Image (cartoon, rainbow, N blue to C red):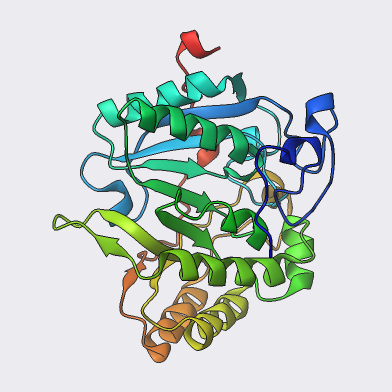
Length: 310
């Protein structure tokens, strides 16, 4: 597969598996509705990621607007699906990288960065030319094309990715992505080939590798278990696994009887038992809480951009 050419991709955008082919430079919009100017909702030190990502001083997290998925339960829907982001220049994005490093953050954590990769890579180059350098965390839903990922080799240090579904029909119903399983699995194999096992500093801060998140969703514990088995069979149990029990009903899920509930303890135990059965020992499993915790939900986070960037 030939890597994507970031210098020309905006005139015929095929950054994600949807391959919309729109000319964003002339104002055409594809599924994610990303245009020519980078959109950001918030940037700040973040303490809610996995321990080697957040560390003691926080992960330098940038929440990008627009998204390649259309999840009915999306916690970040104000900016991922409803356009709440603010447009900024590449130079100001580079300044954000600098500010996060000056605040003591351990990394640059790019949340849903795919639609903005050409601008992000330019900003990273500017920041590094100016002497700024932190590990780059690629924080993604997993819905990625291998061609795009190949073009990121040498720039991304840590892939923080999801496996959401094991059935394409479920992916289509829940996230409007009828080919999610195919692409998320092939993407994970590419990420693993590039970055491999998670490596950390002596004080346990991630510097390279892959972390795969398994988000337990209501009614979908069987699919989570199937993905755990797929990981064991196709990558192995050395991959860092992060089992997340933090689902809370959000966005359109609040209007659905199927989705407007937390996961059950039985669903939680089913997934945990599968992790143990397959022999995964590297990673983290969130504690179960039957009461929905909205404290860290994206829709509760205020926008945070300095006025100079607006």
